[in-house]
Image (tube, rainbow, N blue to C red):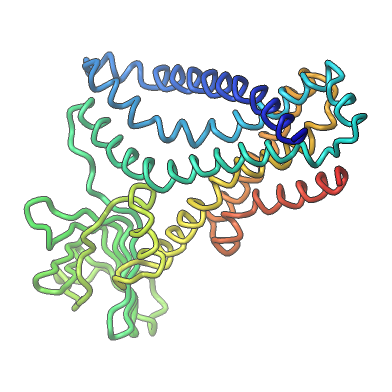
Length: 355
């Protein structure tokens, strides 16, 4: 009974602070959005409806950024207030163990984690995709269809690389290529431009340079205007970035079910897929570490300082994992879960002191 009353008491202490934290960060992120896009709004005479739609499209991204910090803020500042008024001392003196106070903290952490998971896996992919449509509607242009670096192999063992790929709007089974390189058993072909023809099942390279492996000279331009290679894989129907597809589609990309994604794209899909499960758990990690740390703070000032330190540490680890993934220096799952793994160890150390 005592534990339940204490739980409700702490939840009533945390909830207003959590809402205040969400409101403050939401205002700051909104003002930052307007500061970044103000010149674009003015120059393109954006309507209020499009500006409001852009804000709605960005709201799931705002939630991704503010839920975990707001939770850390409410726990650490709330416990700091309770400690300042000597209520923690009275609670501990009455025989209540510190770990009992972690139950309501864990409960709110689980709830915020569930909300964050829904946001990352359901709301945000759709909103991110719609955001681009809204942005290009504001600047009165069509969204680009160009895809990034592509690498493929045909059945003969040749390797095909393109710096970018742009499916043609009027002919979806054709795509313009740029920065093309084809590696064959005899030598290497390069060209600045090319065409992927899905109907003829070919890659056409224009103004081609060639270097045979047997030659000691550099690349030489070959006389024919167009050089054609047989290429059977189909043109990818979906050019959306990994951030804008559903979790099910992202899982399919990570497994390369269509056999049409490069190793770079497969790694990126695996990393983004793992992030969709790892990032929501940031709230739970904040609850555990914040709770263990908050029960040792003496006032709200220390709680506020601890919030900043906690978020700086998590963000640094998150960014390290992101940078390592960008260079594929470590496996995708390790890069995605790095911050949570370190904080989980910190939580176990902190909780051990309270048991």
